[in-house]
Amino acid sequence: MDTPSPASPAQPEQPEQPASPEAHAPDAVDASGSARDIADVAAVEIITTATVHLMSAAAVKIGLAEDEETGHYQDLAEARKLITALAGLVTAASPEIGGDHARSLRDGLRSLQLAFAEALPFPDEPGEGPGEKWTGRVTR
Image 1 (cartoon, one colour):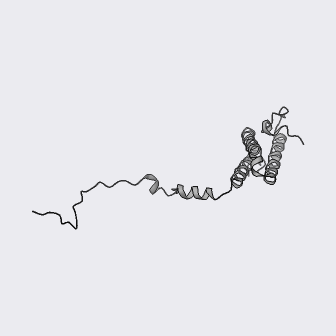
Image 2 (cartoon, one colour):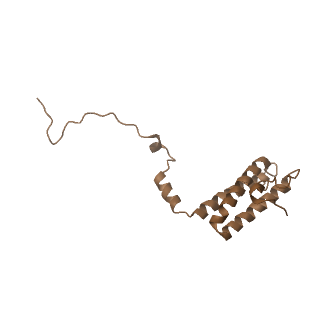
Image 3 (cartoon, helix red, strand yellow):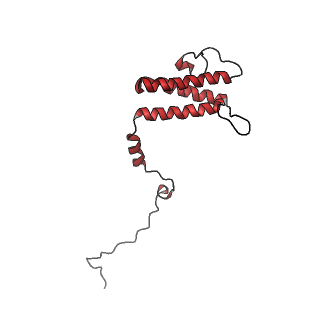
């Protein structure tokens, strides 16, 4: 009668557990590493980065970027949404991020609001332009 020796106890065969889908995904992100990276970035930098993305997208949608075929991209309905979101973020963040940063962001926002007004075939009613709910009326 064979009995397992104490040095090598018999191990029951266990079915192999499939690895999680994330383990095999080529673009798997280490969440703890990402959290550490974000933790090292100052809030003002994150806010500024978000506003720059909104500003860039709004500028393209206004038609300030050229398209090789038609000469420009333009989607004023989308630009209005982006500028309104930008205005809300800039207005809410300004007291928190300091004067110099806030001033630059407000200047960029105002430039986009004016460019939007110029791109419109018919002007918005006073105070109805994108973001004017938060910034007040934008005039030249």
